[in-house]
Every structure is written in C-alpha cells, then in structure tokens.
Length: 179
Image: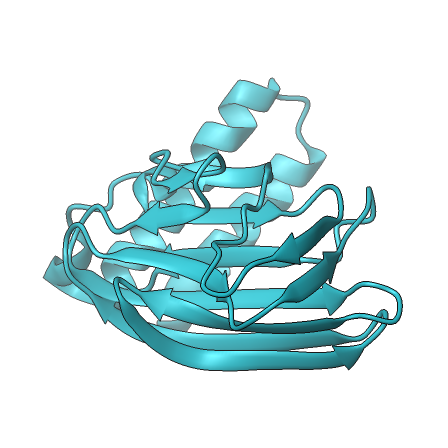
C-alpha cells in the first residue's frame, strides 16, 4: 500500500515539475485518481472510470430571496459544480441519477433583522432543520441519505423566511454520491 502511495506521490511530483500541456496533466492526474479508487474500493468502483461521472453538485444563492413561503423551495441559482446536470437551478431540485449513499449539505444565512427556518427534504419527507437566528446569522446542516434513483432532494423554508446572500455567496447547497 505504501508503494502505491509512493508511486502516486512521485507521479504528482513529476507532473508539477514537467512542462506538459494542461490536458496531459489533467489526464495523468485523473488516471492516478482512478487507480487509487480502484485499489481502495475494489470491484465496487469499477463503473467509476472518471471522477467527473460521479454525481455531484454545489450551488449558491447569488441574490437575496426575500419572503420564501412555508415549504417554498430555495433556488440556488449560481452553480459551481454540476456533474451530470442532476441539480436544476431553476427549480432548486437535485434528483439522484442512481441508487446510493449521498452526502448532502446546506448553509443558509438570514437577512438583516429577519429569520430563516428551513429543512432539507428527501422527496416529501422533511429531514434535518436549520434555524440560523436573526440577521446575518448562518446555520449549516450535513447529513448522509440513502437515495433511490429518481429521489429528489431540496432545501425548503419552514415558514416565512428571509434568506440573505450576495455575490459573496453565503447560502450554499451541495450533494454528492459517496457509495
């Protein structure tokens, strides 16, 4: 095992000092990471030949969304990563493309003098909640969910909520396939 990690380290050192094209550098790093995943995970990860094929997204709210009604879905419109395009910024819904164990996280910030109260939802089932408090306060919820293909994950308001964000992107929603 130490030999494998030593080999990977040496390859990464060569990449960092060589004058290669970015395409070649990325291909070599991707191949090394794929080898590590295969080595660590065995046959379970044979379908994950490329890391970009792993369902994953991160999106932020780019402007304040005032007065989100009870059970209203928060729409995280600034998409940073969206492997497979399974998150829809127009609806705020992440739809699992395959069955598996997913890590889900959200951070929300309340607007000045206002409250935010929200939950992460799996289909029509409410899961963990967030209550940042009044005015420029943040709360974060992280959980691992067993999702079936087609399950939908959203962040919804628990009541009248005033969410704050700006071009500093204080409110964020992410999910990715673990196994």
